[in-house]
Length: 144
Image (cartoon, rainbow, N blue to C red; front, side):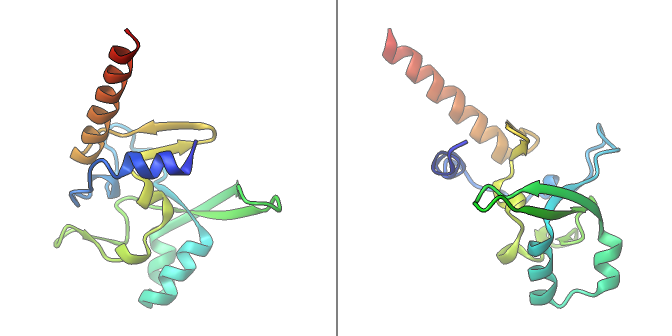
């Protein structure tokens, strides 16, 4: 996974703010939510003055992930319970968009260990999927 490649791919379209990524998936009701790094959550809570009670209600205990930057550290995580506590259902927008967690910035790309998948449950994901397919077609045609 190349960060430059990820940025280039995500720049091919834009989020429409539909909020589907902030809502529970009815096909997978046991999915715990969006895993974020605790330090990101702490910054958001401080900046937006979110109560401890709201954070406790809107999150679950997470795990740990390896920090890709040396030294080999481990980062603690939390699960944002879906629907996300930061999503404003009425306005259909993220209340913490400026400081949103990296997992939200990268969506519709979803990382699971060394695998990367593309979610196509929104127009942004569908646009990216179409652009990948078109790129593959161009590459195949150029080899012929």
